[in-house]
Length: 307
Image 1 (cartoon, one colour):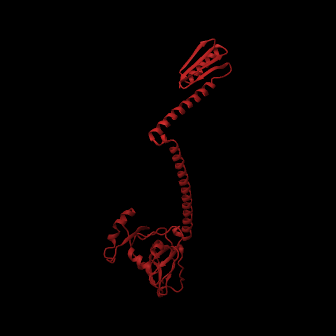
Image 2: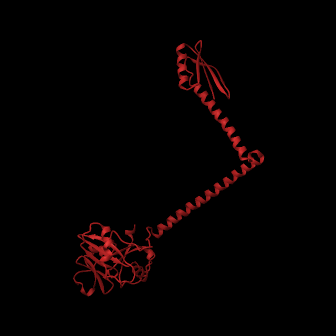
Image 3: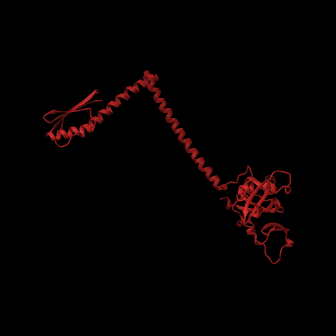
């Protein structure tokens, strides 16, 4: 999204501007120092380590410098720049540093300088020996027409000033997101109030129950009651499971004659049409893991167990 921003060319003769939106800027050679070197290094991090030593005696001692390094054909390109100087330059041109997304250097776009780019009324940018320089307009060939400076000059990579971050969103996009977040915030607030009222109502009902039944106010008594009913619930569930399992043993030739279920255990008696059915019923009962299965004669099968 940053590459779609308007690109401004910053030069010494530039007039102050008044911006209401974010931009990218490109600096002319007046605001950076350039060196190209053939070095026996292979990786970018190695080149960056030696960058300060290459500019010994070439930079002003005022302020601190940082370095942009990249490879251009068989040479390493080193650009030294002063962040504090750039910040002051932007302010002097009416540009708030917070309005700037990316900062580029003219040398990064050397391939686009196929002709001159005018800087005000007296100077121009041209590419000489694959290096972008500032020259007087009087030195330009009158037959060669200058080219306009557009967003097409935007390089792929740039720098940001330390402590300043360009916005990825336009003002309209930021406002739209702010409204969406505000809407969600309102929804959460309304839901929170609703849940708060529901919680208050539940607490009120609980307090009414405790007032009606003082014994419930004791945590130990509440837990004792809960344990008691938990045990009852467990037994009732077990009874339902046993009845369901016994009903699965009823098939053609096997009839449930009697069933007794109480809190201690159960006893079921099946009448079978013949010995083969009785044997099959006993096998099914054992698969259901009933504790006691027995044949009592006359093709009768009794199943017993405890809860």
